[in-house]
Length: 383
Image (tube, rainbow, N blue to C red):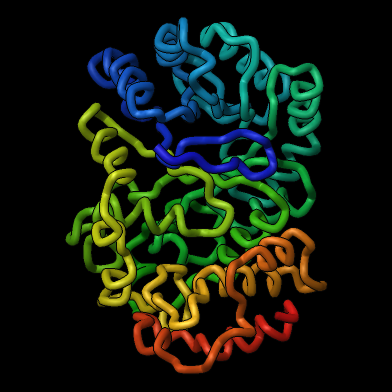
């Protein structure tokens, strides 16, 4: 298992992480089985968005004796009321729900406390106005949570929270179909058939800006809906009109700026095993570029996907890395952030070494003007 830094939190998380949807299977008997397999494979991060008390208790039992092996991402504002899940913005309900979650899990602290499911700007304002963000900060000051996060499907809301410095971790829906869709307060728009009816071109700029801003500001992204609820794995259901594999979906998500891990939904140990197998898969099975380039309904023409099909460079420039740092620098709009400049500087070879042979451009599946990017990077970074 490979591990990544979760933004600036200091936590190192497994690239493959565990979602909680399938833990309720077989009357919660699946829960300990998934945790046993996760421990065996070195999966150390999991998400708990559900408020079902029986599920929380089952997870608490599964964690007993091995709490230190797992990093918990659990959701503030996800409450159980009248026998069902609810998202609340009522402070007293939120407090009671969080305390109950801690008790049922049997833990002294939560590693990442997620402000749950915020997809509208006025809802984010309610989070602030109703004292929920302040409550999260109180929990952090008391050591009951270590870091503050937010779960969202809306890049406008997520970007507001990131730029305001309110959060350290973002749980966000990332896959090559959702990345085409503009911001919406209705999560259903992400997979509505009519939104994919015409030919779509290139990533939504607000989503791209969000990922790059998170990278620059040290906010780690944990990915939900990597497989689009399974639709991307099925040619008949995929909004792109063609299917991707599990490995291609994971590789795409992990190649986006700031992404630390993919929360793989699993309704069986075998499904989790399939996601964990990504770690041992050859590059040929991870390669999403040619599949994306052949999608009948979608085009990323001229857009760098960080897929590294441009390699090898005859002078050994890591073209994908240079392009990523160029985009991160340009996203700031106000000079090159020092961290980006430092990361660029330690590359073994820089854009200024480009000999203009265009071998990379001939290999690029997306028609990116790489030589122009190398020239811009050389001028921007001075090397």
